[in-house]
Image (cartoon, rainbow, N blue to C red; front, side):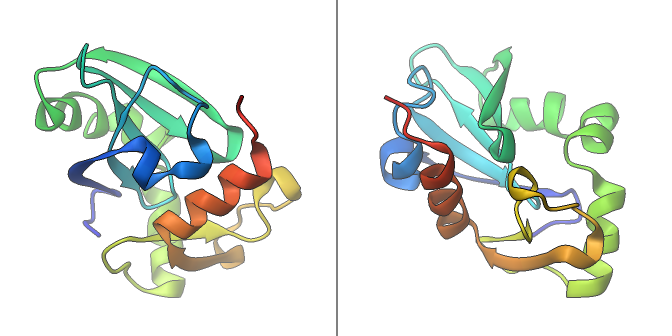
Length: 145
């Protein structure tokens, strides 16, 4: 993982990358990245609209259309306000100090999950595989139909 607090990936079909979330946000068909804390960056391949999934809340915020993923990352993900409020880079730095850096396809996971009473204090996090994390949280918060 980068020090930026997020990773942009080769676009993956939502149905394959996050099957437990299929139907939750039908307007978005691609996963284009994720944050160190498990937010997911989604795109609509037809309209070039991008959104951020706030995983623990099962809510997404749209950010409009962009020419490509790099432009979305430059204008949204690297924005200092977004980095402070959503990516929580200071919070992630405290977690990283306790748990070490993340490897590819890993995220920091609050335990217990905030929607199950977790505090999200840095010492309550563990490291896990992003796709397993998304599948478990999606199953707990779904179904979406």
